[in-house]
Picture 1 (cartoon, helix red, strand yellow):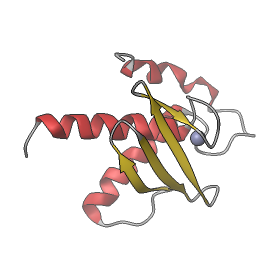
Picture 2 (cartoon, helix red, strand yellow; picture 1 turned 90 degrees about the vertical axis):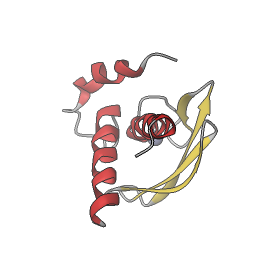
Picture 3 (cartoon, helix red, strand yellow; picture 1 turned 60 degrees about the horizontal axis):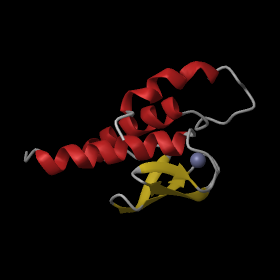
Picture 4 (cartoon, helix red, strand yellow; picture 1 turned 135 degrees about the vertical axis):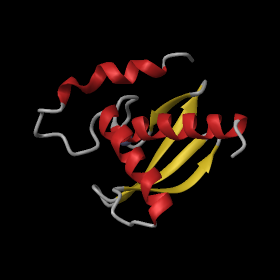
Length: 110
Ligand SMILES: [Zn+2]
């Protein structure tokens, strides 16, 4: 469970040009930042849209990059991308940030 910082170690594959923009956890993290800002500013230029979110169960995203929906399911609270069949794509990075975001918001009342 406490492996949140592991994602920071996985940014070394950014130069692989066969990969699309959301092929690493770090890109997912960046997209999440964009999504957060878009939530505040109403901007529409983020690549990922959250379609559905069930805490600790699954997240359904729409990835504009590949023009299709992506399902991430939480297995023992670690996200797994069913669409990419991996636990280290950008969708998973996004889901990790989303979960942390909601976990925080459960504890802190703004
Ligand atoms: Zn994925």
